[in-house]
Image: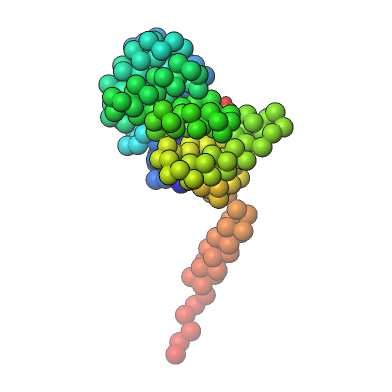
Length: 224
Ligand code: G3P
């Protein structure tokens, strides 16, 4: 399973990249706003900056909601860098845009997926990725992971190549469970990736190894 980071923070992207396990980045308008990135030029430059840090797919979302607007923005985003994937919302015009981008060889990520039917439509239009939002489904007392399982089964039934990109991940167990269910990608906040490193027995075990090593260093070598 590929690990993407779900942020527009260059600092967090650099930190995740330095771990050596990062395969790509996803952003959205909320994440861009959180970093205070606004205005056409700054937004486009920010995507280029991200692409210069990570050699992997970078999802850049269109703001327009009409077909013509999405096509215009998507073309501009795709022209920025070979790693840009145009992120398009799951709407009727979004699906039409995905079909046209696919025909032109522009890769897409269909976002705001909350049902298997939506994932099937996006795949039929040729989406490179679909982004089911598992945390937001959990938030309304439904089962986000069940959606990952359902989409995986449907795509496998028909040999569909669209990649399942689990999004709206909230904690490290979401990442592990997505891997168990066969998601192709998990896009995660940095905190969830970092939490995967931690286990109390690892900490205790390392402390004991080092204490034993120090003790051995301080013990005089016995003469033979
Ligand atoms: O990639 C989509 C993701 O950013 C949504 O996450 O936490 O806002 O539900 P969240």
